[in-house]
Length: 116
Image 1 (cartoon, rainbow, N blue to C red):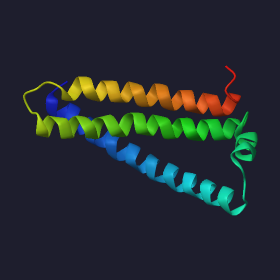
Image 2: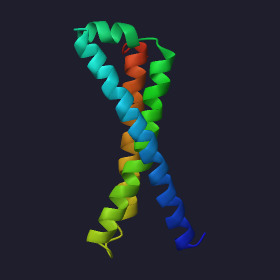
Image 3: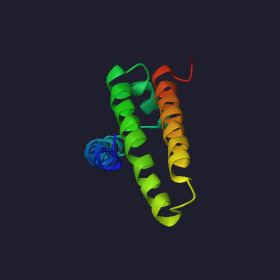
Protein backbone atom coordinates (compact mmCIF):
# COMPACT_ATOMS: atom_id res chain seq x y z
CA UNK A 1 0.00 0.00 0.00
CA UNK A 2 1.41 3.38 -0.95
CA UNK A 3 2.08 6.04 1.65
CA UNK A 4 -0.62 8.29 0.18
CA UNK A 5 -3.29 5.59 0.40
CA UNK A 6 -2.25 4.73 3.97
CA UNK A 7 -2.37 8.40 4.99
CA UNK A 8 -5.84 8.75 3.46
CA UNK A 9 -7.10 5.69 5.33
CA UNK A 10 -5.62 6.99 8.60
CA UNK A 11 -7.23 10.38 7.98
CA UNK A 12 -10.64 8.75 7.46
CA UNK A 13 -10.18 6.48 10.49
CA UNK A 14 -9.38 9.45 12.69
CA UNK A 15 -12.36 11.47 11.42
CA UNK A 16 -14.81 8.58 11.81
CA UNK A 17 -13.49 7.78 15.29
CA UNK A 18 -13.85 11.49 16.16
CA UNK A 19 -17.52 11.31 15.23
CA UNK A 20 -18.00 8.24 17.43
CA UNK A 21 -16.09 9.92 20.26
CA UNK A 22 -18.28 13.01 20.00
CA UNK A 23 -21.42 10.93 20.44
CA UNK A 24 -19.84 8.89 23.26
CA UNK A 25 -18.70 12.00 25.15
CA UNK A 26 -22.16 13.57 24.84
CA UNK A 27 -23.86 10.42 26.16
CA UNK A 28 -21.25 10.06 28.92
CA UNK A 29 -21.85 13.66 30.04
CA UNK A 30 -25.61 13.08 30.07
CA UNK A 31 -25.07 10.01 32.26
CA UNK A 32 -22.88 12.06 34.63
CA UNK A 33 -25.47 14.87 34.85
CA UNK A 34 -28.21 12.31 35.52
CA UNK A 35 -26.16 10.68 38.27
CA UNK A 36 -25.23 14.00 39.88
CA UNK A 37 -28.76 15.35 39.69
CA UNK A 38 -30.10 12.17 41.25
CA UNK A 39 -27.50 12.36 44.02
CA UNK A 40 -26.25 8.87 43.29
CA UNK A 41 -23.22 7.64 45.21
CA UNK A 42 -20.37 5.78 43.55
CA UNK A 43 -21.69 2.58 45.10
CA UNK A 44 -25.17 3.17 43.64
CA UNK A 45 -23.71 3.93 40.21
CA UNK A 46 -21.63 0.75 40.26
CA UNK A 47 -24.69 -1.17 41.43
CA UNK A 48 -26.55 -0.01 38.33
CA UNK A 49 -23.70 -0.60 35.89
CA UNK A 50 -22.40 -3.91 37.24
CA UNK A 51 -23.63 -6.70 34.98
CA UNK A 52 -25.28 -4.25 32.59
CA UNK A 53 -24.36 -5.43 29.08
CA UNK A 54 -25.50 -2.19 27.40
CA UNK A 55 -23.21 -0.09 29.58
CA UNK A 56 -20.32 -2.46 28.90
CA UNK A 57 -20.90 -2.35 25.13
CA UNK A 58 -21.24 1.44 25.14
CA UNK A 59 -18.04 2.01 27.10
CA UNK A 60 -16.11 -0.57 25.06
CA UNK A 61 -17.14 1.30 21.89
CA UNK A 62 -15.80 4.43 23.63
CA UNK A 63 -12.50 2.61 24.34
CA UNK A 64 -12.19 1.35 20.75
CA UNK A 65 -12.85 4.84 19.36
CA UNK A 66 -10.05 6.20 21.61
CA UNK A 67 -7.84 3.28 20.54
CA UNK A 68 -8.23 4.35 16.90
CA UNK A 69 -8.29 8.14 17.31
CA UNK A 70 -5.58 9.13 19.79
CA UNK A 71 -2.59 7.17 18.43
CA UNK A 72 -3.10 8.53 14.90
CA UNK A 73 -3.04 12.09 16.21
CA UNK A 74 -0.04 11.46 18.45
CA UNK A 75 1.85 9.82 15.57
CA UNK A 76 1.18 12.85 13.36
CA UNK A 77 2.36 15.25 16.05
CA UNK A 78 5.51 13.24 16.75
CA UNK A 79 6.24 12.95 13.03
CA UNK A 80 6.02 16.73 12.68
CA UNK A 81 8.16 17.47 15.74
CA UNK A 82 10.74 14.69 15.25
CA UNK A 83 10.57 13.87 11.52
CA UNK A 84 13.71 11.74 11.32
CA UNK A 85 13.64 10.05 14.73
CA UNK A 86 11.48 7.06 13.81
CA UNK A 87 9.66 7.42 17.17
CA UNK A 88 6.21 8.25 15.84
CA UNK A 89 5.10 4.77 14.85
CA UNK A 90 6.41 2.75 17.82
CA UNK A 91 5.21 5.28 20.40
CA UNK A 92 1.79 5.51 18.80
CA UNK A 93 1.51 1.69 18.90
CA UNK A 94 2.44 1.71 22.60
CA UNK A 95 -0.23 4.35 23.25
CA UNK A 96 -2.80 2.37 21.25
CA UNK A 97 -2.11 -0.82 23.21
CA UNK A 98 -2.21 1.02 26.54
CA UNK A 99 -5.57 2.59 25.68
CA UNK A 100 -7.01 -0.74 24.57
CA UNK A 101 -5.69 -2.78 27.52
CA UNK A 102 -6.36 -0.25 30.28
CA UNK A 103 -9.72 0.85 28.87
CA UNK A 104 -10.97 -2.69 28.39
CA UNK A 105 -9.73 -3.62 31.87
CA UNK A 106 -11.76 -0.73 33.30
CA UNK A 107 -14.89 -1.76 31.38
CA UNK A 108 -14.53 -5.38 32.51
CA UNK A 109 -13.88 -4.24 36.08
CA UNK A 110 -17.05 -2.15 36.20
CA UNK A 111 -19.09 -4.86 34.46
CA UNK A 112 -17.93 -7.65 36.75
CA UNK A 113 -17.52 -5.59 39.90
CA UNK A 114 -13.80 -6.30 39.92
CA UNK A 115 -14.27 -10.06 40.01
CA UNK A 116 -12.79 -11.68 36.95
